Length: 252
Image (tube, rainbow, N blue to C red):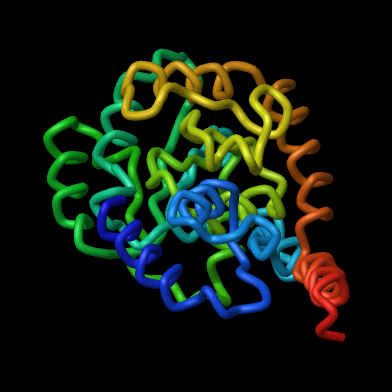
């Protein structure tokens, strides 16, 4: 956070003459306000999604067959670049703690700095038969891989981003599990479009996952509401917001 905030301070100092400053969430807006930038210049415009791209992902049967995942397993999926702050280690430990008689499988999509460590943890926890690492996946294929999941999880993130991952999970119509923190609560609502858990708490993450594994009707309700909510976060709608911002600033 310190490094990013320093960058924002420099950005703020260089932007005093700008007509508009766009922040992707209220956390970034507050950083800019704290540096003395005028509130009237700062507009919040969140990230968006190509809803049609993710809606065309399919039902995941092909990918389940590809990875040998049982058709009756409840699949938990994570998509990311495996950076340390993603805390895939936390997810693996939480997955190990799930207490259910149902078949479960963890599909980890992507590759990065912490992939090898995650593989070692999966082996140490005795999860190698229930965890699949896909490796690096072309972006155009991400949706078809993630479509395998019944539950999509963000085990951790920093405090200032407006994570695309959450919007994409919603567009896929997945039951989402994410940490309970300000920037995440700007996007999703606990027990409506996601289940939120106490951040960095492996027991809380495991409990949220276990709840969704056990309760198919809850998964369906949350995934359905998330899918409908995603329609309000398309790039087309973001473009309309930008047009309004430019109009209000007298730039168009």
